[in-house]
Length: 303
Image 1 (spheres, rainbow, N blue to C red):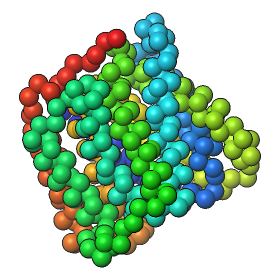
Image 2 (cartoon, helix red, strand yellow):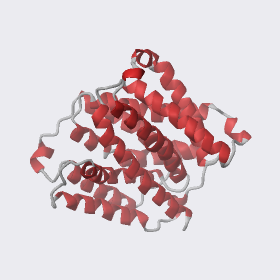
Image 3 (spheres, rainbow, N blue to C red):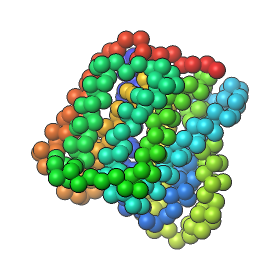
């Protein structure tokens, strides 16, 4: 299997894991402050990834050089998670999911600005098809639901979170100096946890951790171990092997994965018409899986 194929497989796994956080997160959105749960998920994930790094690759001396790199990456990804929770306080889930589908396009733009990665015609077609398919799934093939979509304050807040997420992907490649993905992830998580703890200290202290509902702890452990720790490694692994637009294109699969999660949790299955959108996202991924020219394999930049 080529490095690019492994990158695609990693992002396929990433999209499934992230989808679970949407389904579980919706169940605890009003039980804990966004900054508190995000800081806690980063702390737990940092411990897990730290142990994994010590057991596998170790921590090379180069990983401790230029620590500002981790502050940049941790700040970007921490901002995404916090702004997502704040946005969901007022934005309907359907509207927020629609905003999320803008991330691959923004990531393609950030990839060009930061790395001069070129979005080829095939990639542009794939991004377009994937966006249409994702919106089809999100609005459940209901044209009237799409027509009443309005941009509110929550959507705007979440949009800036998605912009931070989009910038994060090419920044991984720009700032990496050859460190293994697990080590680079550890630095990002530690820096992100530090930033979030300082910024949200009042919310963390105000949280009654001992009396949180059990579902909050289940969700926290899931998002820390799978939607944060594992996903960080998967994204950074893929970002070092694929262009930013291809990495973030896998977000188009998230609505389809969410449907499967909802079914697994006992909620109604979608109509057959909705599955057309899921098929379109699969077509988009097939387009992305086809080989590209040199821009798809831009080497990691060493600073």
